[in-house]
Amino acid sequence: MATPLKRIEKEFMLGAARDEGTPILLLAGSGEWPVKIRAVESDFITFSHGMPLKLIRQGLRYEFRFVEREQALAFRARTIEIKETTLTVEMPSTVYRNLERRYSRRPPPAALKVVFSFMGERYELSYPVTREYEALAQPAVSKDFDPNDIRGLVRSFNEKTEEKVSDRAIVMFKDRSPETMEERVIARTGRSLFLATTAGGLPDIDPLPKPRIVTRGVFAEWLREEGFPAEQALDELARFERGVREAGILSELLVPILFQEYVIGYVSLVNKTEGREPFDLAMLETFHLFAQILAWSLKINGYFKGAPKKAPGFSARVLDVSAGGLLFANESKDVDSSLRPDARIDILFTIGERRLKASAIVRRTWKEGNQNYYGLEYDQIQPEDFRFLFETLYGRPFTDADGFSVEGLAVKKPLVDFGDLRP
Image 1 (cartoon, rainbow, N blue to C red):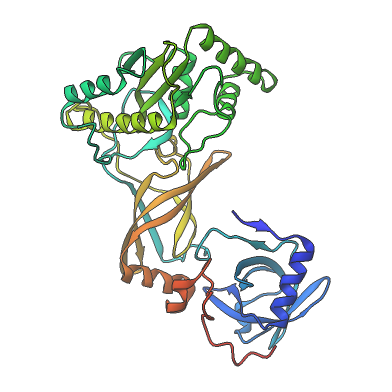
Image 2 (spheres, rainbow, N blue to C red; image 1 turned 30 degrees about the vertical axis):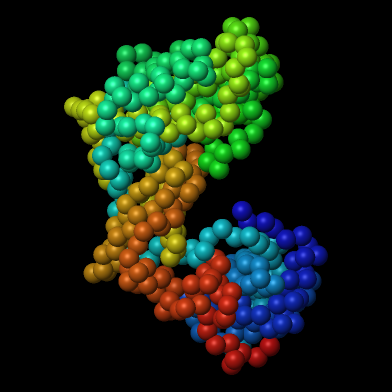
């Protein structure tokens, strides 16, 4: 995540870049132009440059990127004065480091057209829609669970749980909606309700690499969505935990069965018998995999046969694009329910007469008003297509130095020869 430098650190980094003649890239027009810092004052910075004057205008804000002390840095600043060989800008209020994007973003070229399509078949189902999205793909091979034999799969489930739990069930939402508080929270969040011991209550944090557990914070947020006032959410959470203990439950695990944007059911494991080991994360992982395999097994064995299919493609407004990904906006609720973080999508670019294909992963989403925003990172793209896209966006050939870049800036060596610039 991008981090703003403190004032003293900002002044030090800019001063070091001046003293060391660090090459800086100014993003203007459709290219990246080399500049160097000539002077750093309290209110402005002066650069030396060799770029065409027609590409830069006074009073506009431009982006600057550079690597100093092995840190990728960037800032935006407004131009004050433009001369043949020098450029003066206002001192930026903030300089950022630890930037996540590998390549700088650009407004979409006028000749660029983009068509998006979901990967695989998508279904219109009457199941609860969750915040999560489970792509329709064959899960990892498991020696314990065979998706090709549903009866054998259920038998394996019973054998795996026989000595660990007192009650077990596979509950489907085919003919009913989520009713209990536990069912409603896992259906809405798409996460597992995991009580290793009911004496300890819901966990405070989710230690898994990809968030998968209903923590206390997630539960409290869901309660607020359900209409509980914020000041009452924690009290209601405590009542829920107390109710589970009073029911004689010692450990509990509910794992949602995710299929695309739907929770089609859940796996329920409950222990009420004293002397048994508490549930642990290994057990959560085992039955998360079981839920994935069960969803796939239902699909390949015809459980969703006859269900209406959704259209594979959709249109969207591209806001910016880079050699590593793009950002687009869309108002569709259907798209919003399907495009969750880690969902995958196909992209077809048309630039003039050239057509390029790529697949991408949704890295972040957010909502502002009626608009939903999606940040994508390309997952697969042909090398020749990548080079064409890079050259179209940045107005220069892709070099070996770009392969070592951070945020599109060369770490190993400059992208261009800066020898003709005067410090």
